Amino acid sequence: MFTVENLSKIYTSQHGTVRALDNISLTVERGSFVAVTGGSGSGKTTLLLTLGGLIRPTVGTVAFSGKTVYTMSEPELAEYRNRKVGFVLQTFNLIPYLTAIENVMLPMIFNNDRNGTTQSLAEELLEKVGLTDRTEHLPRELSVGQQQRVAIARALANSPDVILADEPTGNLDPSLSLEVLRILKELNEKEGRTVIMVTHSPEAARFGNRQLRLKDGRIEDRLD
Figure (tube, rainbow, N blue to C red):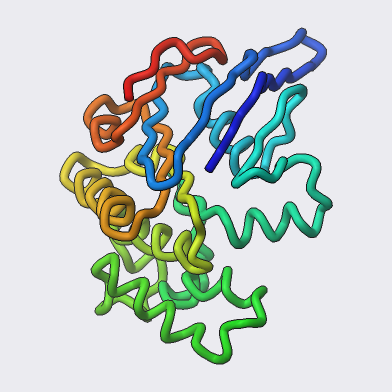
């Protein structure tokens, strides 16, 4: 699914340069669950967002299903982010004045091929994450675990090929973390969705069938 070659990302400021990614090469097979671990500042999130088309690398290439991401036109790149990739973030990023179902429907409104099924699809996705009885609740009326489940449902709205999850359990207690991880694992095993998850938690990383550890922007260890 992903082929990454000689990927580096360098940030420059008045204080000097920071090499967030340092000559990384890797492949991610379709249907895998990859857990990316490493300490703070190791490059985990930069790698994830680069795969997702949100951070342009300084050098190197990212190819998705054989197509090089950063040679795409801006409309093609927007289509890639909207259709091919679903993002699940630690901060949830739900719109506070929209209900759960409206938050899930939001990514769908930019597509014109739903033929009036947007609401029914959102209902199905909320049912999939166990929130059938919370469709009309605002984010502030939901627990943090429920908010993260809404975020997962939203990430699935346009049926992406891959889910990119950045510390999806970072704000959750252990029991809620396990709940979210089980949902991601089920999406991977039962629906065949590729999952790439950044985490600082060794317990969460064990849900992956492949683990990468980053240090100082480089792959320090691989466990397949």
